[in-house]
Length: 92
Image (cartoon, rainbow, N blue to C red; front, side, top):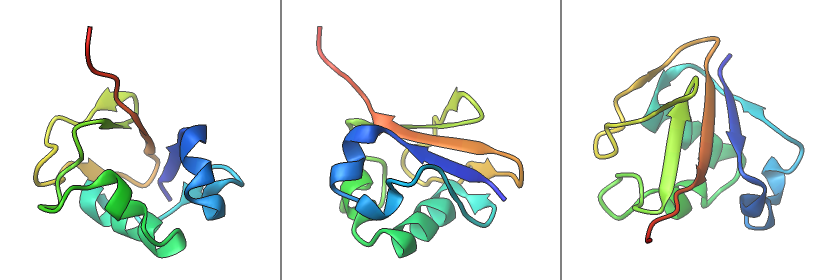
């Protein structure tokens, strides 16, 4: 099963995820995020905007590669993948 890891700052909002990485069924990025939301209700509200795309200040990687398709979230997450969800920094 794929593993989803989140940055520690999200633990205060989603204490159900404090115990470390969670395992979910493989599928698209959108399906994986919805599976995490079932474990920690409100998670997708935090990381996705009103259109269902990744929020501007959220980044997501699959096996160390940043997800480019932030709008449709169709990138596939395989059985052995590791997904990281973290805050993206902007500015200069």
